[in-house]
Image (tube, rainbow, N blue to C red; front, side, top):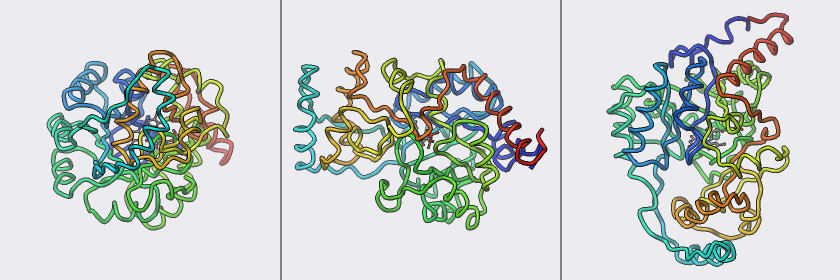
Length: 361
Ligand SMILES: Cc1cc2nc3c(=O)[nH]c(=O)nc-3n(C[C@H](O)[C@H](O)[C@H](O)COP(=O)(O)O)c2cc1C
């Protein structure tokens, strides 16, 4: 592979110069400024809008378009059934009590627990963004067909071979994003328990490449050009990086979250359901430790239970009860402006290919 590492099935699908995608990061980090800077640099920025109301999504899309005319994407969470398990809610409330007391907070379970997915999707369709990616499940065939009919490139998330094959079988996706166990943030799986679908990214890319014809995007623990080159050589057509962008000044990462990322080591992350009820990888802290063995209610109920606590902790600069999503590569994070980070990643990838093949750009 030579100059051509930049030219892949994914860059052709998305109309971008580099097979480098800044992961959607819902809950604040992937701001319009971050998304626009990555797209301006030749990669693809993706807004993480899973928690956002339709109006907020529309405003974020408008803001990206004000900042760049380059392609960008939007990502949503496919809804999972809401089950209110009173025993689990009581167990979670009891475990959260000491943390809530520190903030003088009476935790109450107040619906709605999540945004209306169909209304969110309407905005994506209406705005005809360049790329739509989804996680936690699979939208209906009709929804996928409508998106593609509107000229939107559609990308699903898989954490196992079975999920990648299932996405291909829908006949409604243009690309598959493979999420390895190394990945920061929520596990995107939808077959079996997400916390049991923990395959390393190298294995996942290789096995899916042999079975699926769609363009593949590799995600999980990729922090530099060596990681991007390894993913491409392994069979992926692009790399998606989340944790690597969290310390960019444009990211909406809160101050206590940034401070925790600066000192975290590779062994400091854990997969936990303590914050949202859905398995996710983040830097271990007091809340993830205290709730490690508590049978908390599933997403989105647990997410709603901890929401106000997390909001207050962020305002108080307290990282001990915040969800500090980060992947295995967290210690290699760099506090660079996003445009500079993408340019650096591209030149590191050139070097990686030169070193391994005696060829580069
Ligand atoms: C803070 C954070 C938030 C995330 N939010 C989302 C999201 O909203 N939607 C999504 O599909 N993936 C989300 N992810 C997962 C990423 O898409 C990707 O799988 C992951 O960042 C790759 O691993 P890395 O963080 O080691 O690069 C998030 C990851 C992080 C770190």
